[in-house]
Amino acid sequence: MTASTRLSDATATVARPTSSGIVHLGVGAFHRAHQAAFTYEAALLTGETNWGITGFTQRSNTVVEQLAPQDGLFTLVQKGTEQTTATVVGSMLDVRNAAADPDAVVAAIADPATHIVTLTVTEKGYRLDPASGRLRLDDPEIVADLSGRPPRTVAGQLVAGLARRMPGDSPLTVLCCDNLPSNGRILSELVHAFVAAGGCDDGLAEWITRRVTFPSSMVDRIVPATTDDDRADNERRTGLRDDALVVCEPFRQWVIEDDFAGPRPAWERVGVQFVEDVEPWETMKLRVLNATHSVLAYLGILRGHSTIAEAVGDSVLDEICRTMVLRDVAPTMAGGMDAVGYGDEVRSRFANPALKHTTRQVAMDGSQKLGPRLLGTVRDATSAGGSTDILALAVGAWCAFVLEEAEAGRVLDDPLSTQLARAGSASDLLDIDSIFGPDLGPTSAFGAQVVAWTDFLRTDSLSEWKRVLI
Ligand code: CS2
Image (cartoon, rainbow, N blue to C red; front, top):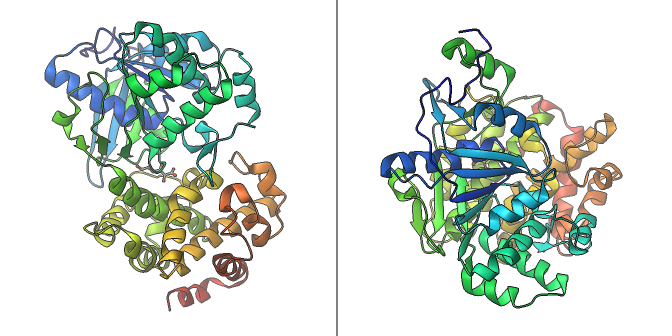
């Protein structure tokens, strides 16, 4: 065997499904380490062969180039603090680029053999106004899809696929797996908003209401970007080259609202939880795990830490995160939810040094992440008369990061990068309505706290940081 023999059906003995009951939009590393792995294990247990996945990337061809020559196979490397394990996942049957072949995605959604469409397109992929959670009907790509071109946006693809599916009347479950609050409801509203704006409904909205479900779900697994070192280690170990390899932590969780329009894999047999109302889970994950992650990313970068593990190992930052959950987040949480205990568990997962999850990876797309992770809590805490001080520090950390990146001449990895680069102060940033809404702007009480923290973070020396906690 030569060093460059590639992982594929010809070189690995891996059980494969025979048809795709699932279409997935957004085949990034997270999907492969999460839904694809759960689905593969469930199919292995039951022997059902129709739970293959046909995946679509939305723009980049990289994932297609990585997976297609490997017949969709990829290695999942789970890095624990002490132990690393690796398995090959066989559920991806086909991977295509939706931008290059827009009709393929419409046809796959319409195919009656497809029972479930899952999505991980990231927060920005939905083209929502972050403050209101509504589809941005003035987004140029949405406008272009509405004018009837082959669809390129998620809303356009789903609606075109559903319209083509309607004559066969076969039900469908559309399962959002992105980090958004009430993600099923948001996606359902987005689809209906697109249908209404299209102006030629022909009974589609009514059919969708009757035959299509949008369960909410909470997904969790830390999946850092794969590095060349990860791929080289694997090649040394197995003798096979795997360009599609994915690295993740051992922990994984998936909680789904039990609202399926048709059949689904036996996910409950591999640890997936089905519940009546997923909202308490989603809220806790977003406001504790993802919020802590973002705080560690922005403050971590300001303190010179390149990984999340380094940032949480910095006792000042660890303490800030613990205090944020205890003082500002936990009091807003529904009774029965142990936000403080969950926060402690989360920080010990973040401390896993094997993961090397970079602060810059978590810092990207801040304009889309602040709302679901921090600002909802700010609103709840404010109306209950609770503390928002450390939440303001968290938002101040984002402001300081954005301002310092602009000063250093670096372009932000954020869909609002142009607008953000024009801001000269925290007040300018707080003035962006699509992020902060009309209520959390620079003249609000919260805005004043954010401005004060941003000034502190940009002027005070490292030793002064201890003051933060007093
Ligand atoms: C992270 C998440 O990149 C980010 O913003 O906070 O991707 C996080 O790793 C996952 O939600 C964990 O489930």
